[in-house]
Length: 198
Image 1 (cartoon, rainbow, N blue to C red):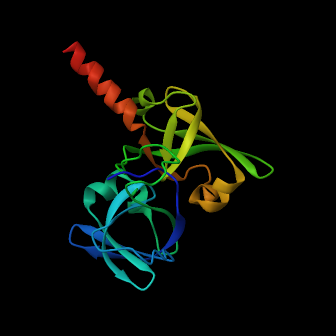
Image 2: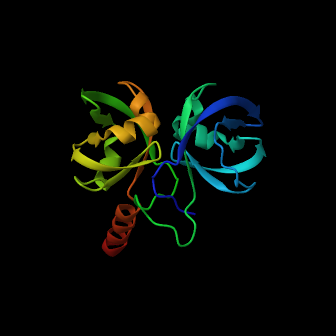
């Protein structure tokens, strides 16, 4: 299962229901007419399975691990979420390879707006910046972005007006929590190098 980090649309949280140790997340305004039960959809960059469809609503279930490691556990009714369906064979790959497996969460450290453009700095555990490089790829709340600067425990991205309008990132403010998935290729390179040293 793979995504590209190109958000198809924003949905809205209709309700959250306790379901065993996790929750059932119902997203409205999704309007994926061809969505099927069992299909994978990235919700704020987190790969979830469609367990039910009712009209334009998509129902997902998220367990305790998902709620703990992502910002999905902080969602409330009315919150907007980024949505992307998994890539189909033969589709264009417009962003970069995204697995939908969130590595960690980061916090908006600073936002600098210049007319309709914005530069964001995100703060996160230092262990994750080793998978980042300036001009490399990063996924923030399911959005494929290009890294500008990378420091020990933070990184920056520059957002164009379209991204700010078409995704939840335009609504993010300092202190907000976002899901982060680092470049999957960087993870494989790191794993390879570690095995070479063993």
